[in-house]
Length: 632
Image 1 (cartoon, rainbow, N blue to C red):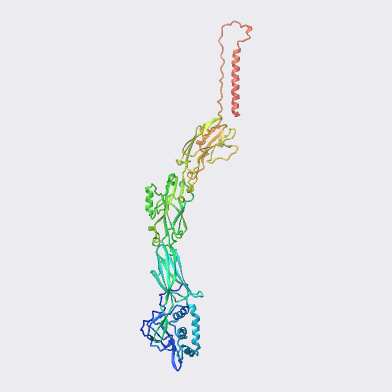
Image 2 (cartoon, rainbow, N blue to C red):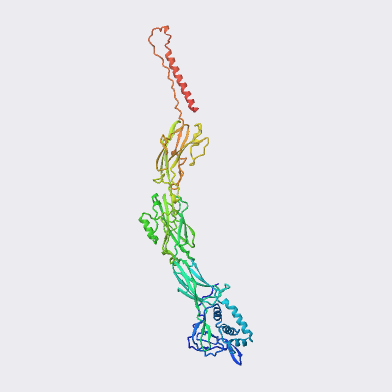
């Protein structure tokens, strides 16, 4: 519970100066009684100019009501309790005999007069009024609970509101708060009390008293103070008296706490995934937080941030990390990057309403536009984000120390943009006979110049280059050469192996730009010569594939590309035709001499031999034609 802080009132204003004449007490403040034939009253003797009440402690002496010398009574447990009673009931009425009971208590404590006019005799007379002593006993029983037993300060600070409290704990022996105890507090450091001052005074209440303060800067704040405990003064006059004194101060132990009003949040981003394809939107997950030591997030504050995306960066940029100088502004840092040759190509904005909030953003082509930016080229991309002090609302701007800017090429804000590949190829010969060597020439473009040599991004979380691409050669056909046209490739995807589709072989080649020769004895990536023999009729198809890596997109040539296949077939030899030679009547010959029978040769033999030769040739032609038709 919060006790209302009031201006501290003195326990009893300073006792009247010597020589001052008191004002006689009013009848409602005392009890009239008769003693030894005389009429007297029991209560305060009178009041000074501050309305402080004075009580007689010298019963046998008449009073002139003039103040003589004034001196404080020594501090003691009894005097603390009596002073506490005077403090609490200083202005109480006597309807319940409180003022009379206080007068009796003061006589009992300090009056030493004797005789028939002394205090003992008077007290005996008053015994006939038991209600007076009953009230006196009640006050004496209450007195210990009016005396502070423990006094302490507790200091608290709310870094969200930049405000703090001082808890003033003044408790009695039972551990309960003691009210009406004046105190004074002083605050040292970058802070002020609610009244705008470095000091404040108040009075304790029935509950723990709370004093508010607010921080004005960064640093330790110390609160010290003192409580004013009641005291009793003795007044020497024609009749000695006592009155509530000005009190005495008791120091309170000082307390200290660190405070921070300035606000220096952190920005963290994470591009996900770590690789995107050319043509994909550029996105980022941005988080703004108030970490311990950076100043708490102001209550209800909204923090605005801007982001700049840099794309198409080469590998060399990974080693050129730029960190903004202390207290640099975002425009100054962007100018520094521009001098180094880096210009943003996309932009984004985000607003955060609480510490730890994450906002997913997508880059746009121009600040404030809705046109999304799509990655235009391969390489690397990175974000720079800033919370700019001058772009914040007033309540946030007053707390920000300076612009908060992320580094250029920060690993968590950097990703790779996979470049696309283009592949063109043409087989050396589109049609060959069985047993011939086949070959292909493949042209590739799109790889980074140093592709295959990059070992990965390390702290950037990017995969190393895949050094090799593959070339596969398929056979497709009927198997007997009779209906190979039915298996001519028509689908871009490669087939599953079966009786009519067989993977002839797979070879690796460097994943770089340029011209690749496959077959014909040209070496593969490992230096081994590659020879591909078309052993049977059908289609032989070349397929080039790169599986993709962190910097380059996957690519595969089409299985149905007509420039990438060879037809192997057996061409039949053309049939030979023979024309009939018309018979010619021989001219009459001159008579020849008769042939000797011993030679065994007739003149008809040469003609017969020629006819047999022609017949044999015809038989061979027919036989060869049948062999061709049988596929042998």
